[in-house]
Amino acid sequence: MSTDFDVLVVGAGILGAGTAEALSQAHYSVVILEQLGIAAATSSRSSKLIHGGLRYLETGQFRLVYECLRERSWLLQNKPQLVRMVPFYIPVYRHSKRPPWMVRLGLSLYALLSGVNSGISFFRSLPKSDWDSLPGLKREGLLAVFRYYDAQTDDAALTRDVVASAVANGAQIICPGSLVGAEITEDGVRVDYVAGGKLNTLRARALVNCSGPWVTTTNARCIPSLPLPPIDLVAGTHILLPLSLGNKIFYIEASDGRAVFVMPWQDKTLVGTTERHYHGDPRDVAPTAEEESYLLRTVQKYFSQTRSLQEKDIYESFAGLRVLPRVARSPFSRSRESMICCDNSRNPRILAVAGGKLTSYRATAHKLIKKLQPTLQDRHHALRDPARAINPSERERSP
Picture (spheres, rainbow, N blue to C red):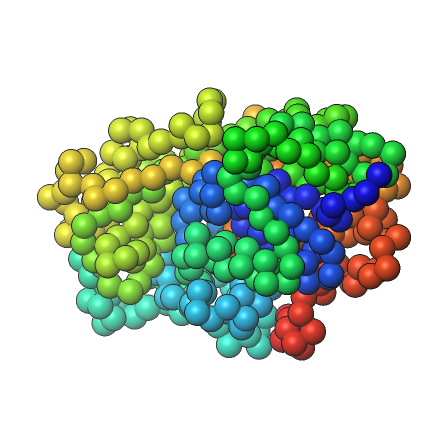
């Protein structure tokens, strides 16, 4: 039986894009199958940040934070047109759940994980004389303001850029195209899909399921299906307000203790995010009135310019879905590391990834490729070190 491709990647979100890019750069033949469009779902509905995840330190996710900070460094060096550093401000009040000493401790650890020689790892406590530079920020009960730096991006544009890189290295994309079924055969995977109103078939050595909120649906169409861990879909809403608070990003605390970002976006102000369990078709996810009201009340608590705004003044809102491990705790406290699943054979043919973060898409892709290495190693072009599956010109600049 002939093999059309080495790997079929299902999904053109950031994880599918990153996996296709890394494989194509390692000289494997890759095709992406995407049912809606590049970055059509979660990868265009995030908080648009490239960051280590300061709040994940509270739940002990040090490895994830360190990995994301390394990836942030790489993206700043290699995609400066899409990823830029921005000042973040954390106001601490008498009513805040986290007192100044705790915030300082967290920022000190964050700086340490960033690397003391990075040049962007330092933070400071803003003197009171500088508080007037913070537009409209509530001063009553304000104890301290901390400034540190992280990065912002256009998540959809970044995903499109990574797909374009994969295509430039020889990857193909079928979009729109929907998976009908996939079955492991003696020497690969037979894949049936619909594109252009027709049922088509292709063959690949392996299939990687990067379909995000559809990961369980895609897995159910594979024979045999993988034993995925228990997972939940968690919706997160953002609202866009018709005003500007300058070029600063604020990291504020909602009434329930959750962290909420208030950031510049397209000459307006983006506020998010929420977290709620979602059941239903991922295509139908949408903000709820309760979420919009929650975010508006949160930002109004801190900024005088927003206090006259009502729900009807919200310029736009959107919701995306995260795939998180199912646990008894709240979604806010769950692990955000990617979950990679495959069968127990020496040469896995079908892999699936659930969860993961925008910032760490390359790291997750390299982990997937490492899992695939036994399946693909009989190729004439043996896979290079998965952690360095990048262009030779980029190798010198990688962190």
